[in-house]
Image (cartoon, rainbow, N blue to C red; front, top):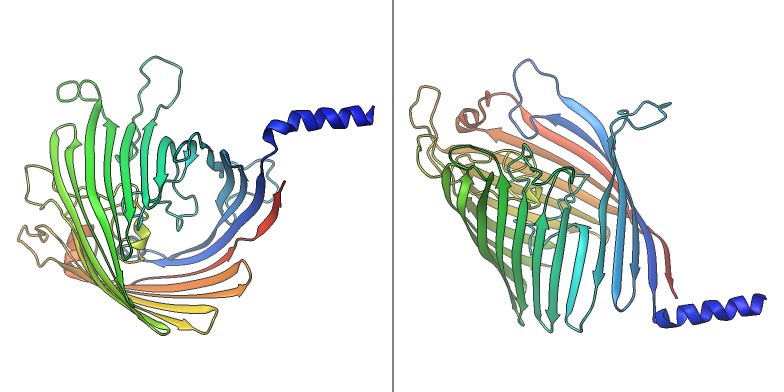
Length: 422
């Protein structure tokens, strides 16, 4: 009887006898933060914030020649937000970060569908947002093409709050939470040059009986990202243009331009660059000219204190960011990074009396140290200080005279728990 059962299993498994891989890994990262002016100017008569936030993520990956499946489960919470003897987590911090399947139906073509992180190039427009403990993932379907040095992705998404009624609305409070999304991403590698082109179309839902009776308006983002390497130097640049509608009643015309040069010699690397994001002047009564990097990993840009484009600064005066950075490799296991940013408003800025003000916003200094402790375990720590100018006070509506700084320490544990090929 046992022998018969064995042969039944062999026969059933025969169509799937090609190589299969299964991996289990985890990502646990508690981070302590001290906030005294993080994300905004520190107000008068306030107390600084401090606490520990933690991501606990379990990753399951399965793959064959024709199929890949990924499931990532996570819990994101602040230490102490759930009582020690609570039977349930009242804050509902548990979620599914990714759950997707990719079917390779042709030598060069595949379809990937489900909840997934979408990230390209330097993640300025579409990124995973890994610094944020919860990350960013989309419910989307991708048609993918790869051949030699070419890559192309065509993405589609459609969001509903539920299926209870015909024509269910999707009207989130954040304008960058879209109703519908379509995009095309093309990438090509050459010997020393790589280039990408992105066209992104988003439909947002906001009802207005007179101006927008069907409830949906569209924002388009198109642009390119280029990277050139020669010897010890590398130059990256990007240019994006946004158009369509900023809201149901206003047209949108905005741009982003960036250029950065990097030079590495021995254990030291140097970088200089600028990024310009167009803005709408505070005296404007016409079109919206404020660029917003909708779904990017914005913490990587414009200073680590997140004063711009991290849940803030939308439809505002834009930004000119002139920056420099230097990395020191300290032995084999640790790195020290220092960077500085000079910020100014891209569009007109006015003081409390209604007079046009100096557009200089302030200077930020960021210091980050990281060290690999053992395999799969890293310690990172950082300190940032914002030297705010009067212009920052006019922009944020708070006094710039208080001390604005931020410090953090994070432990990152990402081991592979199990791996098997059968």
